[in-house]
Length: 224
Image 1 (cartoon, rainbow, N blue to C red):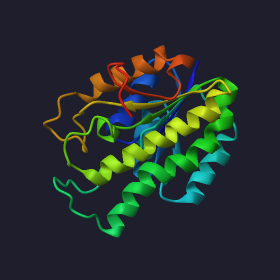
Image 2 (image 1 turned 45 degrees about the horizontal axis):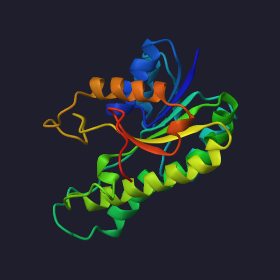
Image 3 (image 1 turned 90 degrees about the vertical axis):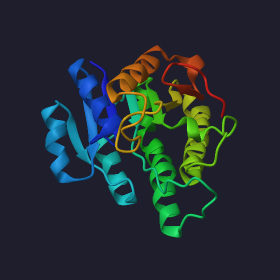
């Protein structure tokens, strides 16, 4: 029975990962921020652990609770979108700090804590990025703070893949597509179930040749 960790599990893509992996019999560990969300995760069969991604002490506490437990799949899903700008409108310092701390700093603090468990299981680390994080594919100016954060997350994953890949861990940045979630909105093309089903297929098929890659939910390799 594989062990799957979902960081950012209480809504959207993260919650659907919990639902699908638990339904397939995986041992799921899922993080929540609000106490009222823990029961939803437990009702799906997950072990629910508290985590505030903006609090280094909370991140450290999660590492202590995991205590090097083997992790077959670690999913870093937690993220925020920030201001929905269409031009080069400067973000406030508060907006910058929230987006960058959630989307970049938190993964940089979490990955080292998960390294031992991933190495023990020869597991897979997948960070949910976005096609908007691709510098090479950029064609518009929408949400440039969010774009910058996901480009930075991609760099974090690529760097982690060099260290962890040498230890048998496969590290990937994944784009889920435009998904109908709170962040993606009601006009998005993909249902969350279809996106997660496709992402799980990509994760399951990944091997060492996929280490350090940026992949679309379809399996297509994306330009950094």
